[in-house]
Length: 244
Image: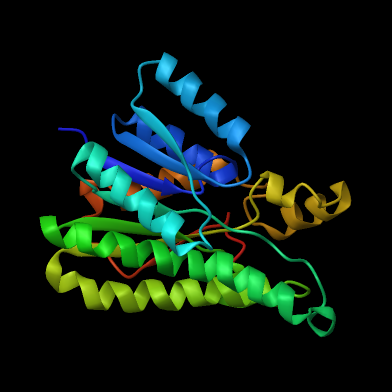
C-alpha cells in the first residue's frame, strides 16, 4: 500500500524537489502551494503524465482554516497520512536595526507559525495510526546565526527547538520528528545573491560548491524512510561542511 506524503510548500525549490523524490519512490504525494499556482499545476500535470500519484492543493500556511482543510481533505480523499514535510518558508535579508515589526512578524508567522499549524493538524491523524513521520525544513542559520538575516535565523532556530521538543513528546506514541538543515542551496530563494557572493560562499564551503534541492530532498526522504526508524529529534545538516 502506498504511503500518503503531504509536502507543505511543494511548488518550488526544495519543496518541489521533495515532491519529485517521494513520487519517484512510489508514494502518493499531496503538495500545497500558495503563490505559485501555475507552477504547481504544471508539476502535477507533468508527474501525473509519467504515472506518478501526485495531487496539488492551494493553502496559505498563515491561514488556520486553509491548513485545516488541507489536512482534512487529504484524509477524506485517501484515508491515510503517513509523512508530513514542512517546506513553506520565506527569507528576509535586512539589518537587525532596520527590521520593523511587520517584517519580523511575517517571517516568524510563515517559517515557524506554518510549521506549528501543520504539525498540530497532523498529530491527530498520526495518533489514529499510532505512527507517523514529520520532517521540517530548517536552515544552518538557525543553529549558528546569520549577519543581516537575524530574524530569518531566529525563525529557523524556533523550528529546531520545536522539532526537538515535539520529538520528545511524540516518540512514546510512535511519531518521529526530525528536521533537515540546509546550507546554501541553489534555489530561487538565493537568486538575489550576486555571483561574487556565491563564489565567496562556495569558498567557505569545504565541499567547494552550492548544494542542490535534490540533495536536500534525498535527506528528507531518508529521514522519512524505514531505514531511519530509530532516528528522531535530530537536525540533519546538509551544508557541504559549512557548519561542522
